[in-house]
Length: 282
View 1 (tube, helix red, strand yellow):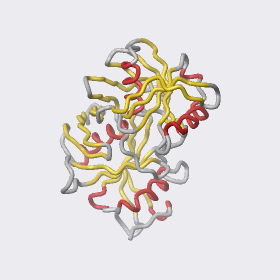
View 2 (cartoon, helix red, strand yellow):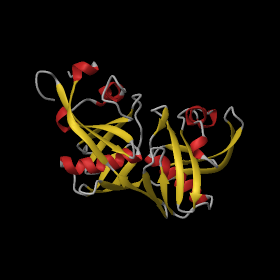
View 3 (cartoon, rainbow, N blue to C red):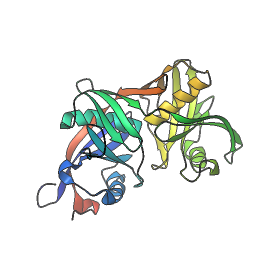
View 4 (cartoon, rainbow, N blue to C red):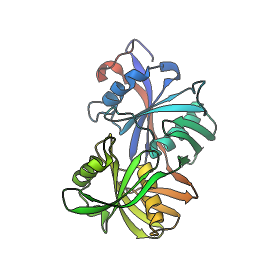
């Protein structure tokens, strides 16, 4: 925090159009109990900074491992276990802010994430937590007919539906129905609609839980689409996933591990005025 105007330094980054605001919590020391309110205010489009999520980078507590930890919140204030694109942005920013070196490990609610950041190239690669709970061929009624749905947890839960033309899908309607379907209650799921272009390329669109809308990209969703497609024999173990924003994410499934790589772009660093956002510090 700085100045009588009660401003807080922030950094905004995006990974393939999936945008996030980051706050260095080492000096701010905002209590975890206050973070959901901050996420809702900061992430609000037009009236706030605007973002898909708010991330606090913090020192590692004595009872945890890693070079640092994060507290990740969706735009609606819900806390998420993991976010693939945010993890790549976090890795890049952590190097610039002195949290860690180019190769490091950081703690999330889903577990430890191994990261490698190339600040000069603006690229980052992370090893996601091992995929789990893979379930193929779940037939569900989504209100517009029955769909063949597949599921895997790549740090957060993801349902995947394959379509001949992903660009023609009404993601907002069908995604919301899938995200809240009773089969995935009570936690719900992220909803992905994937189109296999060939054995090395996938087009994927995601309706994100917590954002409650389609986002330009989703790293864990891209990983889920690649894991399911490979399990079904539709693709190779390494694929390029084109997001709805037109960017490319690289996914590699290697044994029990999944690696996610792509651009991480620092858009700006500056200060936000707490009063303008209806926020305050004790």
